[in-house]
Image 1 (cartoon, rainbow, N blue to C red):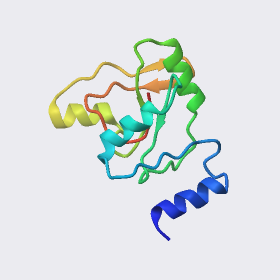
Image 2 (image 1 turned 30 degrees about the vertical axis):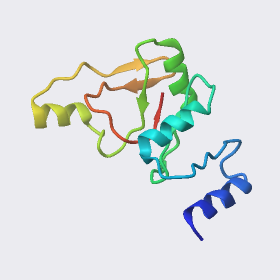
Image 3 (image 1 turned 45 degrees about the vertical axis):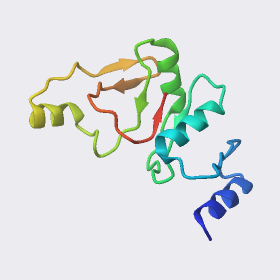
Image 4 (image 1 turned 90 degrees about the vertical axis):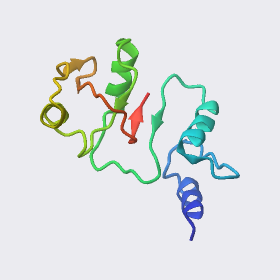
Length: 124
């Protein structure tokens, strides 16, 4: 079984819900492939998850969307990973930087500003 065969099997079995799987004819690399996918959707928000990431805990996506829908400053919500646990402390210890404080937003989420864009699952 190839990766694409397994994706097709999971799609046919309904494991992806009502999502559409976009298969490109050639290798585009992550950025260009994501651009093609974004061209194919008309929704206000998207959840971006690469094939090699998985969620190990439940995520309240409705809270993330509510936060982005009601707070114009929130344009991107990255999912937490080992890299972002204690992020503010890590930036302080490693780089001597003090981040703006985390804040709670509509939907009950606590968001921590980040200095770097991490290549991981996110809502935008």
